[in-house]
Length: 397
Image 1 (cartoon, helix red, strand yellow):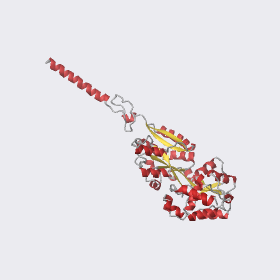
Image 2 (cartoon, helix red, strand yellow):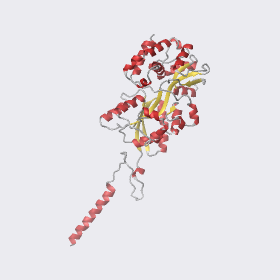
Image 3 (tube, one colour):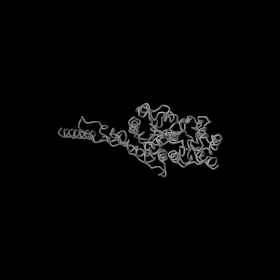
Image 4 (tube, one colour):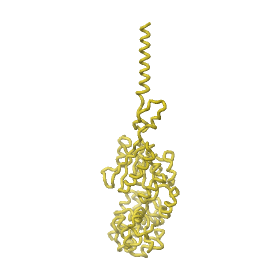
């Protein structure tokens, strides 16, 4: 009997030990994002692990000029101050550096079965959005995860099948000296006629050296083509360019210097500043920045034409294989807030990504008549072919 009591006592002690160990030692210390959770308080009234968890950190890759880095160096601390459970690790790749693009890394990781490759959020242009759609690397976005997507024009989201956030934008448009040009052209036909009626008062840069000149050339080439062709990279379209190149050749004797094409976007802006020309195609953000810095005369104004020059957003894409989507979505929602968008406009001198009606009246007035009407060209490698033919057919004449 004594022996039986001892056995039962031993079994009870062992059972109690196992129960205590199960309650204290087998707890999983990782949260849904795979981030170690904070130590649990032994009090029965302690906060949940999610509330005590360390901040979720995601990796954000972007490239560009210093002003792009300055933008994110401003926005990210603003976001983290308001959202202490999320950390954004920015990885800046200066323009022209690195032998392997970020997109190639994302795709390689997917193909190798290595998930996101530690790249959760990525910034780039329309070509990468389109390519990523084909390769199935971007996550589809909606207002459930990012409520402020409702602030973006629905057609803009539809253009990219909801695979990217168009968080800022810029466009090529006409920049002109309003003290000399009182009635600027409003259509492409009017512009072409104005160039002929005002010899050597218009300039556009070599299209291979800057997007403003490239936009002018492309807009002329596609003037009489179906609208869908500006979203088509089929080489067969090259056969339709003859009329446009004939127009560009004819214009040669009427443009600045009877056929002088400055290098880079800044080249034509310098001519406008010096008064050597009265009108140029230019990027809106460059004009706004140089007006703000008093580098351009305050008589310089901007106007879009019909059909519009090219322009469009810069996009943020969420890696479909990211395990940090909730945190990334939280950040994107902040980026699309009027508060963050005002900083973007100030830092980048571009258009806001959200609809102007969501911005202050002052901001709406600033972009009135400028931020509408541009078109997004997505012609892939045909842009390179345009530059080659322009050099032989136009510049070399």
